[in-house]
Length: 482
Image (cartoon, rainbow, N blue to C red):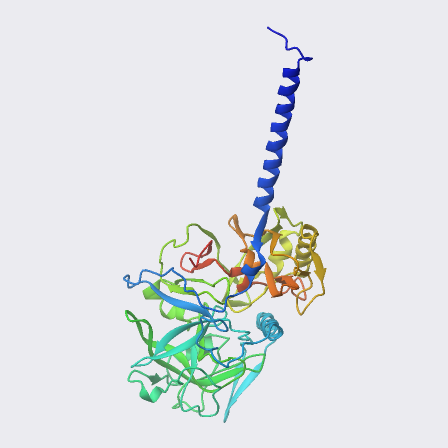
């Protein structure tokens, strides 16, 4: 066997070339690994446009077991509610309303809410405590015969669907569309106090009932912790989701006394797990199956589907659906851990399990146990060390001044759920943008580790979120809106 001449110039050149190739391969491997752990994005992508762009995704409406409604952000250019002179709420107002909602959820889960709604001679205990918050996302449905199109905030944390009704016996706030007049509907009827249907309100702790006398119509009342309220007749009428999707005898609240922070929407569409929610009322038709995609910014549209439309996203990852012992109306998840830039936080799984976790369409910012949030913030700061920190604001304590940048690189944040499911949060769900000089980590801590964690709507943006209640699972599909 020939022994190479190590003093040969060709041998030296060969070794140098080999070392260069090894170094280049190692550099490419590091770059590839870095790309797997980070997002690179243009800062302008975090800001909404001034014009509306519709989503191209729609359900197959030829199938009578499926229906798709367009979802719009209430304060964006796609919404008809805030056109012209109407003024959108400030960031401070949005975050204040969001904190009120979070507090109300925690209050409801600990049984500390004991407000009452008064109706002449009767006093209805309003145990809900749920606050509508900023009520970001709305859909349009029809109520009555002929139908009256109404924009309703949809909410997975509420069961009862309700809308303002004429003659507004006591008070109605201003809304964009004409207030529904039950006298003009051929299919409207009040529910009697003595009927079994009225007792459905009693079985739902979040929507108590009241009756002036046994012969009177059934009355519902909800007092929210932010002092918003709705009270009126528990009723039934025809609900129209599309020309081919008409739900007769749909139970809803016909509000005669309504006020607070509903900001132009005609009422609320309850997507909770209770018996009076639209999910349960349409169970035979849609199989307790719905999904939605919240648009990445307010200048895009999303959708709300009822019925199994199939795996409309390329890949949907499922995690088991759980139930909180203190309230069966919420959709609970098993959060086991969080990773930042591929680095799993050292927070024990017991921290997440002791508090429990729900997914909520009405909460804006995800709330975490303080122990978990502190670890998340510390690791995020460590991996964002090249960017300048700026002062905290409202519920956010990890904020950056990015005014000198057009493009930024941020670490990926992933949530690890039960069933071996890892969900990579969309870049738009990692940062909350006030301006280029104040961009904050879009997560916040609860007061105590024992407070339930909430997976909010900012972190749900861009996913198709699938609620397969019959199958006992919730799914997340990437690029869900397009």
